[in-house]
Amino acid sequence: MLQLNAVNFAFKERRDDEVHTERSRSVKAKTLLNISLQIEQGKHVAIMGESGCGKSTLLNVIYGLLQAQSGEITWNDQELKGADYHLVLGHPMMKYIPQEFDLMPFTSVSENIGEHLSIQLDDRKERIESLLEVVEMTGMRHRKVKTLSGGQKQRVAIAKALAQKPELLLLDEPFSHVDNFRKNSLRRRLFDFLKSENISCLIATHDRNDVLSFTDQTIVMHEGNVVDHRPTKILYTDPKTKYVASLFDDVNQIPKEWFRTDGDLLKYPHELQISKSGLSVVVRQSYFKGDHFLLACHFQGETLWVKSNSDYVIGSQLFIELNT
Ligand SMILES: Nc1ncnc2c1ncn2[C@@H]1O[C@H](COP(=O)(O)OP(=O)(O)OP(=O)(O)O)[C@@H](O)[C@H]1O
Image 1 (cartoon, helix red, strand yellow):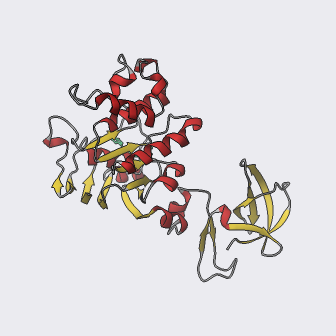
Image 2: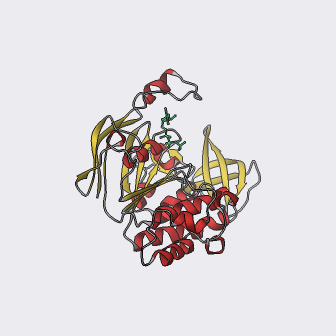
Image 3: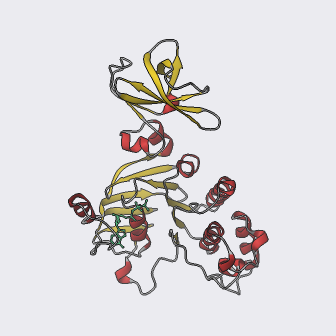
C-alpha cells in the first residue's frame, strides 16, 4: 500500500517561461499542500485537475525525483526517502513514465524494453514478447527508437516500465501522443495487464476515458490540494462541486427553484432531456457529436447544455426536464 501523510512541496525557483500574477505566486509558493492519501495494492487511481494544479509534481515527489519539504511517503510501511537521500533516483518497486519519456534512440524497440532486464533472466525473451503484445508493437520489435513517432515511443516507454514487474506504476498522461485509432485498445490491454499482475497504478490525466472505465478511485487536485478522493463511479455520478464535474463533461448548475428540487443541482448534459413540459428554453447552438447532438440552450440568461438525439435549428423553443 502507498501512503502519503501530510506531504508538502514547494518549488524553490520559479520557471522563467511563466507570467506571474500575485495569485499564481502565492499558489506556486506551495505547489503541494498537506497531501494525505492511501492507495491499496492492485488499485488503479486517477489524478485529475486543471492544468498546473500539481499532478505531475505529486508523481515526481512520490517517485523521489523531487524532495518533499515535509511529510512522509511509505510503501508497505517502509518509508520512501526522496531525492536528497538517493544517488540513483527512483525506487526499485516503482516505475514512472513522465510526459517526456526517456528511451535509447539508437537501439531497437525490443532492446529498449529489455534494457533493465538481466541477460541471464530465463524468460527474458518471452517477457519482452508479451510486453510487445500489450503495447501492440510486435511488428516493430527491430525498429530503432529514433525512427518511431511520438505515440510509438510512448508505447515503448510503457512496455519498458513494465518489464521489471513494478509493484506501482506512475503514469503521466500516458496516451497523449497515441492516436485515437489505437488508444482504446491500448488502454484495455494495459489496464487488463496491470490488474492481472496486481500492479497498482497512479495515472495523471485530463482524459475521462482513461478514468471512467479503468480506475477504481479518482483523486481531484486543485491548486496543490486534494479536494476529492472517492471511488471513480461515485465521484462522477455525485460530483460535489462544479469544478469536479467539469473535469468529466460540460455541466449545468441548476438552482433549486428551476425544477423545485430540495437543493441546487449539478447535472451533465445527458441528465437533462427534451420534454413536453418543463423549462422553456431557446436553442442557441447545436453541436454534432457523432451519436448525438449537444444543444446549448438559453434560459434566464444562462446556458443549459442538453444531450439530444435530434438536431434542432437555432432559435427553436423547447421544454427541458430532468432525466430521472
Ligand atoms: N521545475 C519547476 N520549477 C518551478 N515551477 C514549476 C516547475 N515545474 C512545475 N512548476 C509549477 O508547479 C505547478 C504545478 O505544475 P505541475 O506540472 O505539477 O501541474 P500539472 O497539474 O501536472 O499540469 P498539467 O496538467 O498541465 O501537466 C505549476 O504552476 C507549474 O508551473
